[in-house]
Image: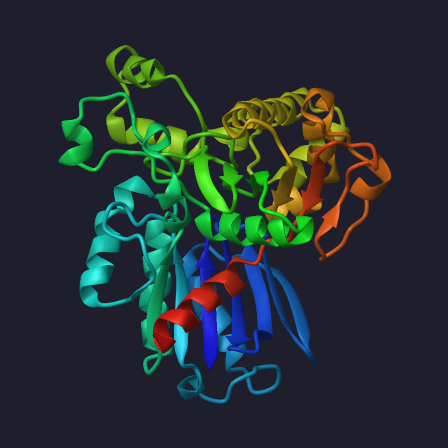
Length: 394
């Protein structure tokens, strides 16, 4: 069974063509920096690879570019779209409607659209991916895998807000959690690596960032909440903020609510602090003496440390912390800064191991560290393929 996986993030598209159940990756690649003039496109098969820097203004154009590469006469991997049995889509917010993987219908698409306001940077891109895929792979089954599903195991004390009860019972306002496909995948890989069910903190750091407390393979707390903008500082999202700031912006500064939403979702985070949303640019500028970039990096790290401390309390200890996603896997700087002065939690980084680049799961702690520090490359696409395959077979 050939399954195309489309993982549309807020500023990126990752994609793979996977043969199931062999799990052979026939083709893979990504587009990042979507919306910039210097978008990066990669495409890789067993025989060919392609890298381009070109302007890709939106997700629709990016997805159309990917489909053309798959069908390309010289470097493509399929001769006809009829070869594709299914397309698996990552959908960020399932709200109260979705806790499981589902076949996509018109009704499902309408429900995803109704959740746009809860994930305005993601669900529109996810739905765009579905619509384009329906056109390109018209004979394939379209399947949605929801980021919120893994966090359905959070206990009520973690997912409820201290607001009137009817807002939960009637309006389903609660913490749902996100990046669940990634947190599920890397926590399971970490448990296999440790060879025991454990108390693990998984740290997903990309343009979107989140952190999860995982106990015996189940999510028990998570930094994001009702929508994917709470918690850690992100590329363009503010993360945690005092609600009073929103009222002040509206009542005193004269902002419209739509304007506040735009500021907090698209103009804040690292972009608001530095003028840049990509950590690679921020780190380079910080190294060249940019004080705003230095402060933004310090703030980013400080927020992560605060969550590690709170989740260590919730878990009553730590067996391992896991770094994953684009920044977590590739930024030795961020990993070193997060792990600095964390001996109280049993974390001691080996700086030499930390500098090693690898696509494999690895530990970067010293031999004396009481808790493991792991780098686990995430593979949301493979996790999505597993869930799509199971759904279709059953």
